[in-house]
Length: 199
Image 1 (cartoon, one colour):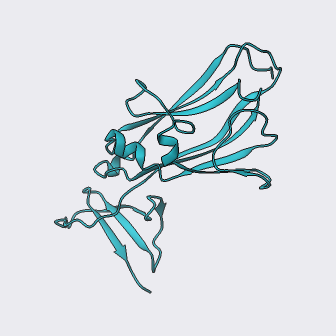
Image 2 (cartoon, one colour):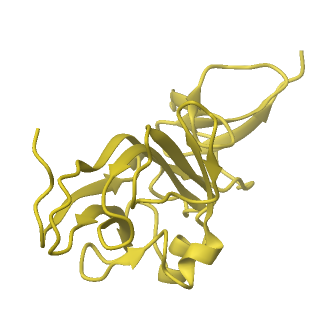
């Protein structure tokens, strides 16, 4: 309804906890996606997205950090599909909504020794300078955070009383039974089984 204020930093934080059924798995990759629309003064007013490996004590800019940004793969495209960027640009005027997605943020869990069931903390911010530009600022929508789990073979003693809790695909997404596909069955006793059935 109003232009964004001068000399201001506005932020919101998202905390993400891994699925408790598979807390004994180690992280392979953290991925997230979001939509954004920006209308700001170029360069001096800007947004940033940060990750905290220690529950908010320190923060890493996942778009611009000189080390980590080189290890994160981004795809960013406009809603109309007319424009594509290698990473989100959270300053200036986008002119329309954009969608951004990461692929394979391997460096974050490996570098900081994150374990399954650790809380992942993200901060989305917009920072303005002392010049009033009467612009709208930065908006985010449809934020999605996910984990890709590693696949391995383990020897388990089968429990005859176990029940199937859910089936996930190789990306860790819950799914239904599909023939000719590799699936992971997760059971009530904590065991998992990689299954491939040919039909």
